[in-house]
View 1 (tube, helix red, strand yellow):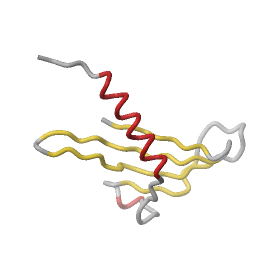
View 2 (cartoon, rainbow, N blue to C red; view 1 turned 135 degrees about the horizontal axis):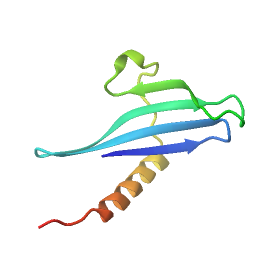
View 3 (tube, rainbow, N blue to C red; view 1 turned 90 degrees about the vertical axis):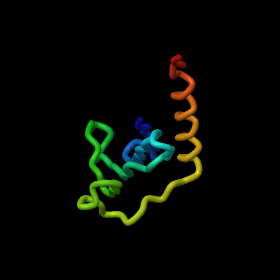
View 4 (cartoon, rainbow, N blue to C red; view 1 turned 180 degrees about the vertical axis):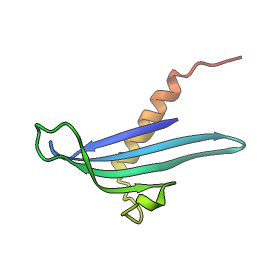
Length: 92
């Protein structure tokens, strides 16, 4: 399961974190899958351009050693995770 958190910094900048929840085989973890800082030229433009990126598995494209993880992003991710888990059906 993937959770995407987008933190907009005005109209032209944003930071995107993607988290993955892994459950199974006696292991339960939340990984940061990727982080990117994106900009666009003006509000008329629709596409975002990656300025800085970090991927957990694709190290060739990284131009950042380790992403900074603010407390408000962690809190937002945990809140989205709880909302998702609350919607899951209980199977007998």
